Each structure stands twice: as structure tokens, then as C-alpha cells.
Image (cartoon, rainbow, N blue to C red; front, side, top):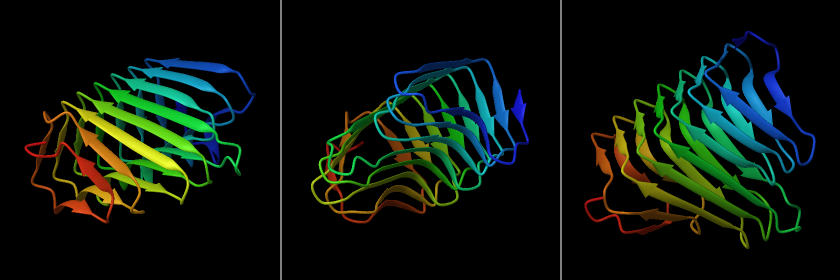
Length: 197
């Protein structure tokens, strides 16, 4: 149980390091976990709750979240971003079999630098009752942000999919349930395979 810290509960910044968090609780801190600069993170069976930001991942991070609950984080549940400054960095985030509820934004992905790539997948998860958005995506010109959705329930959020920039891509396998949100789509990203979700 990592709790009530004035900064981040866990910080991983050593390039090439690997972090595994299993059956843990990260709660009540400014940020539950921060990992940047070529760090690989695996999180399983963990509660991330009541933080400002639940998880923050930066350039070259590779993250898998499975079987976990991310709830009650005021700003963002999980935030993945890139700041490659023209170095063509890639960040990856995969979420599976998890619940994201009662956050501000449940999931935010944003490529902030030209040539960056941000790859995101969400599968067999429930994203519900988030006060701002279930998924917020953005990218600057010359970068690429892509999300793939497979078998999720996305319901009762203020906005399901919020596109900050027009170049972002959202790909659905056609087996997601998107219902009872204030709005299903906001902004101008590219949506593919959304018929019937």
C-alpha cells in the first residue's frame, strides 16, 4: 500500500529499467506512479484510487495494465504522453480486463512532438462514470496517435471519445458497447469501424 504522498508514490526514471506492480494499492498521492524515458511497466491486480493523477507515463514508456481498478483520480486515471523533441520516440500503453471509473478523464494519450508515435489499446474493460471523458486523444502535426478498442463497455461518461486534435485515429473491432454517455464523440479525430461499435 503506497499512500498519501505529496508527490508520486512510485517513480521510475532510469532508462531501460523494468517495473512490476502486482496486487497493490496506490492511493491518495499527487500521482500514483510516474515512469518515463524507456521504462517498461507491468501492472496487474492493482487498485489506483484517490490520487490527483493515477498513472503518468512518458516518452519511450511501454506499459501494460491488466486486471486493475483505476478509480476516483481527480484529474486523470492513466496518462501516457511523448515529448520526443523531433527524435521520433514511441510510447505504448495497453489496458486489458480493467475498470476505470469516477475519474476526471479516465485515459488520456497525447503525442506532443513532431515524429512521435503513441500506440494505445483497450480491451475487455469497463470505462464508466468519468466526469470529463472516457478517452481523450491528441497529437501535434507530424506525430501519430492511434487507439484500438476491443470488447469494452464505455458508458455513463460525460464524453466517451474526446479528440483534442484532428489527426488522431480511433479504431474499433466493432464489438464495443458505447451507451448512455453525455456525448459519444467530441472533436475531430478519425474514427474507423465504429458502426455498432
